[in-house]
Length: 356
Image (cartoon, rainbow, N blue to C red; front, top):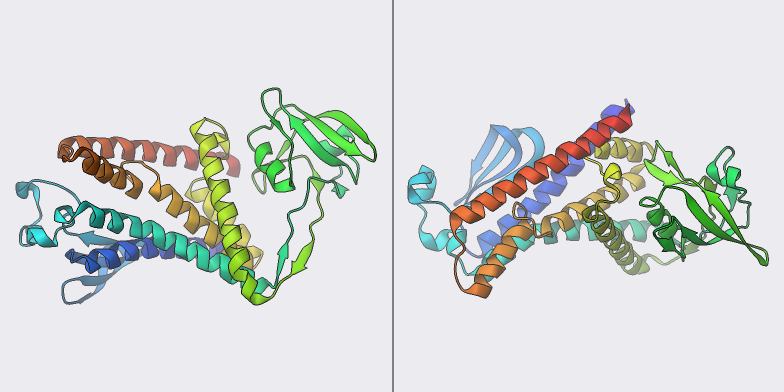
């Protein structure tokens, strides 16, 4: 039963995130007078449609995401156009609008994802009534049979430095250390402060299959600080900024070829969603906010098949004051789309391997 609830929660979460993204494109496009043929909730066969002044609002059979069909979103010759597009005047086509308007239409989807994430982060902070101070990398309890126990870590020990032969960290918080550990999980050398002494000990992290993270096997102690509800705006925004920094850091590691084995696709996200729903509404909404922020940030990256890639092309055209050849743009978009599909397949492969 929990699996069914988790899958429903997963599809609902992604559908809302995609719909919010497309709604951003739609609202700004309509504001600038772009003809939008259809705004659809869901994909696949049509179940219900209502015709507005210009736009058809649809509900389709597959309850997953949605889309907005804008005139002039893709450049193409008149011969290749659909019949409906041939009747749309140039002034109502996106590709005939000023470039700054086209850029705002592209940015709008990302902004909606970020706004959704911010509302969720702030809402969670306001209703929680307290903030958890970031714990330092100090051992509160050692898990039996863990690498920490085998290495000789004891309650009260503070990790002041860790090295793997290539990189070194002096963690200010436990979160800093855990993030570093995900990309440096070979044989490590820890420098630990115990009373007035600094000890050095070798240790090798282990993969926690349930959370799919590398750990040493010790517990830290966190302290809760009560806050009035209105400070939720500040702490929620702070949580979103911290999450954004972590996302960009993870992307930087991926570009360098680090942490590829930790990459998760839809199967992994569905699994994490199931775990989050079993832990309660707060955990689910926290994941909701994080996924929305991830999708927003990923979409703004300068990848030709994404919104950020289209924005980059528009900026280059503005800079060089000439339009880039349509065929070249189409080929670049297709190539980047193939790479994204490859990344998707690789991430899904990782998910399946972890399941078994």
